[in-house]
Length: 171
Image (cartoon, rainbow, N blue to C red):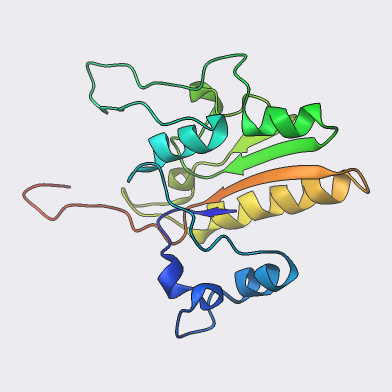
């Protein structure tokens, strides 16, 4: 589960002063905690690229005059490694960058991208509806695989603030 832009220091399981988010805290009691995990980049696109490929990310200048690097078709990804070992694989993301157009679906049996902007009336704002839709899809998929071993990648944006600059720099 990727909680985009969430800081571990705010989560009870990693020593935060409040027991939030409670379901993540419960999940960590049933699993394990990576206490020294370090992101390979400060932004989502190269970080997830690195996570999926197990490589250092390329420098990704996001500019209109340059194509955005995607995961190469046919690349051996984290999902592909699980699938080759008999796992069913699925990914669900509400982050607009983590999508099939940039090949983030590579290696997954099923991949869904839910746009948070489609569930909002105002530019640069998000509704929790997209997060809940993403979670519902993941829950339904997990239930559908039954007793098969599975790997799920779930990417949620709820902790991530919209970065809307005040006038005169933004809308």
